[in-house]
Length: 285
Image (cartoon, rainbow, N blue to C red; front, side):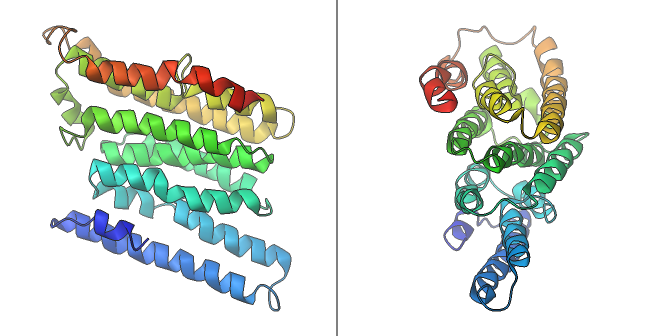
């Protein structure tokens, strides 16, 4: 937390507000987690201990019940800081959840998936849009952990690769809203952004579909209701991404030819499609 705070510092007021909110929420969650560990031996019954630790960790992850800080903090960050907050900063809480007793996680992941989809509807800020999308992806990871499967880290790596390609497509232009996507005037940029969005939504045959498919195969007999909710949330996200990108695609008749600056296209294509081939044995076996 203390190392990340200087990285998100900027002189504008929105960034300062994000730093204050992030510091308060993370300090609150860390205090609860540490105090719970201190008093767990003598004063707390196991179910109360597990509930408090889960509450502290889900607060750090930006999940239900205290999820609202994550989209608000993301709005004041640069794309590089948002990338770190959405990936690296979530790794340690996810690992702690994976090794602890799984109590009430099914409730957290169902409500978080629902919140993520509802928050994405009619959202005009790109950072808030991807922040709510991150909440639904963390719900998929929790479902994997709920069934005691240890390939959740590969899902995390794949999600990090996808969000990296999205940030790479728009980081130089510093886009902040859906309407600013019109700046992507070249067909190659639009195609790279489209591939990344479809992979983030879990649409086959892109990389984002592979970990969801592995989770569906492994958990369909044990947690069918949670799995149904998460599949519906993924379909809603794909619809939102298509509604976001289609107007730009259909209005690109006057854009420059596809042969200009192909590097972004090939990076997105590689990370979101061909990269899945060597990862298949680790996800299914």
